[in-house]
Every structure is written in structure tokens, then in C-alpha cells.
Image 1: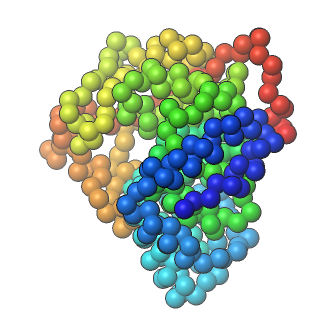
Image 2: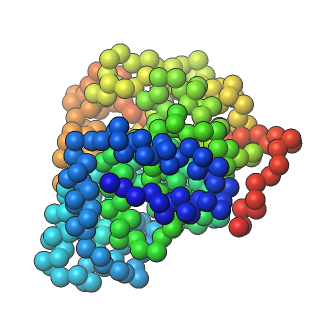
Length: 336
């Protein structure tokens, strides 16, 4: 199974040390109770990954580890076959020793939209909720984050992250944990919390916003990216059984309605920094994700609508801050 011992050691002397009161027991329970039928196959593939030390790791411009000329054609083919075993790859892309993992989502496009609007991540403790394979965690480390922690209950996403991490030798302070945010205690320890592509999957979006707030230190920054609809502060779409063929879409507010929700949850300095329509170039089927994708979710005769007749996916990025409580003691200096 997956060994989290190194991560426990890394946080033992940081502001996250109180998490160790519950985290090991939670992950031990996960190993027993959330065992995916393909987990044994994925772990075998992880163990077969060759050790390929490299000095080339680029996390600033993309997630690129190693160079194609560093390994033989035969080894590259073997490595491609091993990485293909973790299909479907949804968030990325990654380039590993010349192998381009062309994921369903161009997550780098989302990062390019987010990065200009957020506080610098250098020396920050960062949490990414619903992180998937951890693509954005690597970009957060590339932006200087001291600790980049992602949570996502998917066993496959955890194994995909572990596969990429295998080749990024020497990188500490980055980890995906197979947990949902409802399983986290109120840590109040992260300088920046990201929730990207999660809110519309929550049956209680207000509870989700409070859960995000509970992870932030005083003055900390929330980066919220989610589906929205056009409209004023009173507009909220409640889809039927499916939205874009997805069953688990509960509420899609307008950006202005979402601002009101954040205000009700006690956030301040709330600003909508981006709204954009999701294109079939940003989310699509590839050799590394061969299932249906956005083009299959839209009305074939009218791409402005989903196949069910709802407005096609529009996404917004909203930044907000948790207020500073004058009664709380400050966390250790961010430059630690």
C-alpha cells in the first residue's frame, strides 16, 4: 500500500503537527476500508517504476521531469506502458523523460488564469481540496510553496500522484492524501486554500465554504474556482438528475450569488477575478483519457447548451480572505 511515513515526519515540527493527532489513524482506516478493486494492480505498477534520477525538474513553466535523451527507447516504451496503467489521466499535463501525458484537462490553462490574481505562494502552507492527480500541487511548489498538501478521496488519483512523485526525487513538502474535506479537523493552519472544481459537487455548498474557512489561518486566502451561470445575485441553477451527464451536480450559482454566499460565511475582500467558458480544447478526450469528455456532454446542435439543455459550462475564479481575529495568536513566521 501507500506509505505516508515521510509526510508525517515532514509535518511533525511545523504548524501542521497537531494534525498528527488524527491523521495516521484516518489513513490507516482508509487503507482497510476504502480499498479499490484495482488498487493492487496500481501498486504493482508503482513498484515497477524504474529509478531515474535527473537534474531536470521544471515546475515553473509546466510539470516536466527528466529529458527524453536520458533513457533508451526501450526503457521509454516500458515506462509509457507502466504509466498507461493509471488510465484515465484527467488533470495535467505531465512530461516524464520525454513521455507527454496528455491529460483530459489542460490544467495548465486554469493555472495560468489563477496565478496572476493570487497572493505569492513563496514560503506558504497551501491546501488544494479536490486536487485530483496533484498537477496543481506541483505548480504550487514551483511557485515557492513551503508545504503543498492535496486531498482527494480517489485511490486512482493518489496512485497517479505517487507515480509522478517517484521521478521528482528530492522534493519534500508535497503530498496527496486520500481524504475528503469533511474528514479534516479545523486545522486553521494554511495560508492559501484552493477549491477548484469541487463546489458544485457538494450537496451543501455553504457547509463546504465553512469547511474551507476552517482550514485557513487568520487573514488566509481562499481561491475558489467553480461552475457558474450568467445572472445576478439571485440566480442559482438547480439541475435535474444530470448536468453535462454528471449525476453529482447540485447547485450552480451565478458569480454574484456566490459572492453573497461567501459574505454570509464571513469572508472578506471578495472579488471575482475571472469568468470564462470552458472550451473543447481545454477539456477533451486524449490517448491518456479515452472516455467521454466535454464534446460528448454538449448539445451536438448547440454548443452553448449541455446535452440536457442547461447553459454550457462557465467557470469563475473568486478570491476571498478569512478575517483576522485579534484574539488569536499569529502562526510562526511564513519565512520559516
